Picture 1 (tube, rainbow, N blue to C red):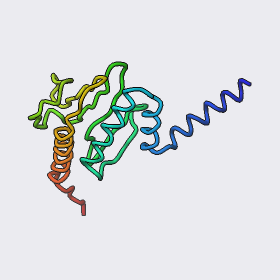
Picture 2: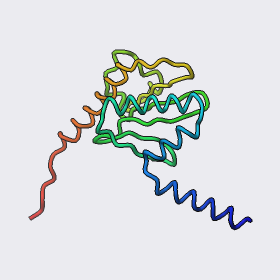
Picture 3: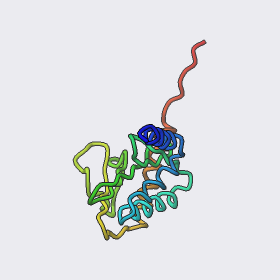
Picture 4: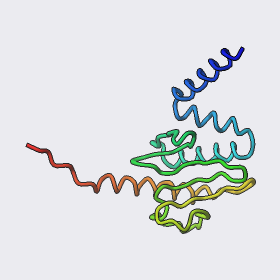
Amino acid sequence: MKKATSTAKKNSAKDATSASPSKLIDGRINELGDWRGEMLRRIRGLIKDADPDVVEEWKWRGVPVWEHDGIICTGETYKAVVKMTFARGAALDDPAGLFNSSLEGNVRRAIDFHEGAKINEKALKTLIRAAVALNASKVKSKPAKKRSA
């Protein structure tokens, strides 16, 4: 029996590494099975609404990441909060005051969503689009590499 259990663990680990990031995020949402899963699902939907070209990734041993010309944000889940961390949030305007966490840093900013929190969908989508535009501006402004002759 021990060998079968060991093989089953290896197979599930292999499945996890071969599954698409989107499937892994689906799995995380389902695995949570409480308000945090529902909140992550809602946030994910808003990200996709704001940027239909977003790419989903699964990094750092289990963190959902959304990218477009670089990281837009992550969706981390903790016991009491779902944290949406914007990779370059300190460079974004936040007129609606959505950022409420990680405010002391020079680069990142985050939004902590607690159980029962209302999401200002319009403001969040605006923030996501601003993050995408910031990433795109950095990609366009990079000088082309010179070729050696």
